[in-house]
Image (cartoon, rainbow, N blue to C red; front, side, top):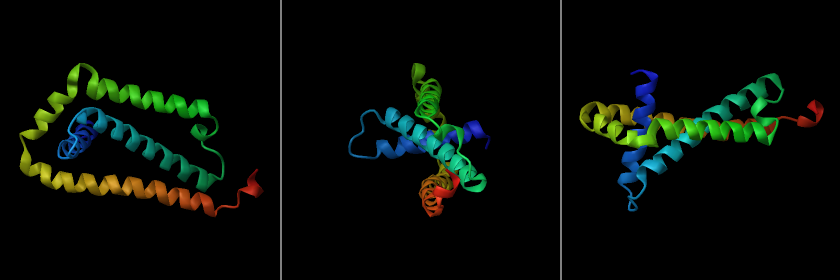
Length: 136
């Protein structure tokens, strides 16, 4: 599975989980927002790993402007990937045709999903263990 298809599959699994919830409205927007958050978590984790290893600040964490630019780029990118001209409908219909492969890939996706969230929490824990007074 290439990276683009994996990204679409992640959106599909999130969309399906929101459709199974009691409030089924705007599931595509909720899935897109959660994709934004996941990409942000991956970038934050990468930045925190860089900060812990090099003990230098990551460029995104240096100012609020850099953070907002990152958020806007991710959000606009995901809007054009999923929501612009209702592309999400084609993505959902493509994955609805192959149910057997989706079950195994779904388990893998949810494992990766929770691994991403756990890595962010663990990286903030590591950041709290560093004595930052000696580096400022």
